[in-house]
Amino acid sequence: MNDTTTVDTTKSGSDQDWFKDAVIYELHLRAFADSNGDGLGDLVGLRHRLDYLADLGITAIWLLPFYPSPQRDNGYDIADYRTVNPEYGSTQDFQELLDAAHERGIRVITELVINHTSDQHPWFERARRAPKGSPERDFYVWTDDPEDYSDARIIFQDFETSNWTWDPVAGQYFWHRFYSHQPDLNFDNPAVEAAVLDVLDFWLGMGVDGLRLDAVPYLYEREGTTCENLPETHAALKRMRAHMDSKYENRMLLAEANQWPEESAAYFGDGDECHMNFHFPVMPRLFMSVQMENRTPIIDIMEQTPEPPEGCQWATFLRNHDELTLEMVTEEERDLMLRAYARDDEMRINLGIRRRLAPLLGNDRRKIELLNALLFSLPGTPVVYYGDEIGMGDNVYLGDRDGVRTPMQWSADRNAGFSTSNPHRLYLPLITEQEYHYESINVETQSENPASLLSWMRQLIALRNRHTVLGRGAIEFHEPENPHVLAFTRTMPDETGAGQAPMLCVANLSRLAQHVELDLTDHMGATPVEVFGQNRFAPVGELPYQLTLAPYGFFWFSLENRREQTGRTFRARSRRSHGARPR
Ligand code: GLC
Ligand code: CA
Image (cartoon, protein in one colour):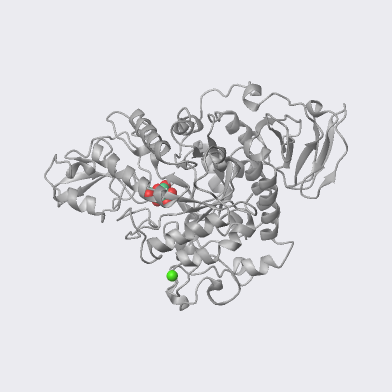
């Protein structure tokens, strides 16, 4: 859709489900393109690169926080919500970026980080000096007893030993779920909620299309609970959504809730909380399935995944700006993942792995394509992390999660075409490790090569955009005897119009060639058309359908000329019991 449409933010109704067909591209301004040679990417730099993104085919960009901040957590430590960090440009530059993106049919999703602020935020400065018990003090969560809420886990366990930190100015402890320089806002104070809604109005008023709600499970605290997913938190989200719906059209809320599928799905509410929600548990299971060469991890987690309510959709991803989190797996699974994907200590952080996609997969092009093909064909809206479309490397010797946040590699020129600054001035060093050196892994080189990963990703994204069924269809898993093969069909309830034919996806998770027999009797008479090459395969007959797959090979077949729908979704079909959820 992006090559023809312009985003019309005044249009109503028909466009409200835009995120279901979206392909989201996640990027950090500072890492993308530097327009003024100070070594730091900025708004104008991104605006100048919008044609690259339009050409890639993505339909929405998700910008990591770009607000004033001491930058001790990559900008997630916000010191002012209502303006742009001057290092990235001005509010005017942001408006111009937004307009330029909309002209290209690209929507813009920004961050609403409301669980916490930086300790440099004026609200915190005011709070610590205000009298105990005053509304100003109560913008944050304080105690005299650091044993309070002791059932809440510590998330940044490599860095913090408690969720309470003593503040000598206030003479009390303040609550923080993340770094101790990120005090949690107190949502029990109505003034906090009002202030947050003002921030939401500020950005939506400018025309922002979606807001990612960072760390949303932790808004409220209650004694005797884990302080996650509390009913009060859901009630606050419903109020926020109602506020948004009453004032704006076609906007979207995206929850970051790193939880098990049931708890995650709760952030959709009854379709009256968030429109979208990251599916955290499916991500490590994609990697596990390829490592184990077995489809079970993927099928198990999908069977535990509730169908989102009307008007809602999961967001899925392979990698992002954080570590590959292993919070939503069993201990056994975590061991397997760490052994397979993070042999060195430097590769680990908190409960996860701080590596980019290509190095995680041993730079095996077949695995990179396979995992992307799964990401783009399983239910949910895919989110691509900047640089992964060209197979960028990482630097595990940088601190925190910086190793996956290095400058975008545009060309083989100085500073990879990212900046004209003195190389020493770059906000982070470029990747110069032999295998991933920016002189060979870059946009310019790959743009000229039709066999490059970038060219392939472009094709993948185009196919996803063309076949709406991948965004909106129900899923039904097949159960072939060969456990190395994952096969499923995506089906639209109403098979009319182009791009609506069912899609059969078959993936070989193993490093060896595989044969598979599929029961396709529901699609008898259909002709499978392989969508990458548009080749017609043998029509589906009465006998089991036979396929041979290359190592890590996969097929996407559009099942043409069938009008009848199967009427079965995977929920209806998933009768296997899963027992207690592993924790
Ligand atoms: C979210 C962000 C992460 C940040 C944390 C604390 O999990 O994705 O980058 O460190 O919130 O703000
Ligand atoms: Ca700059």
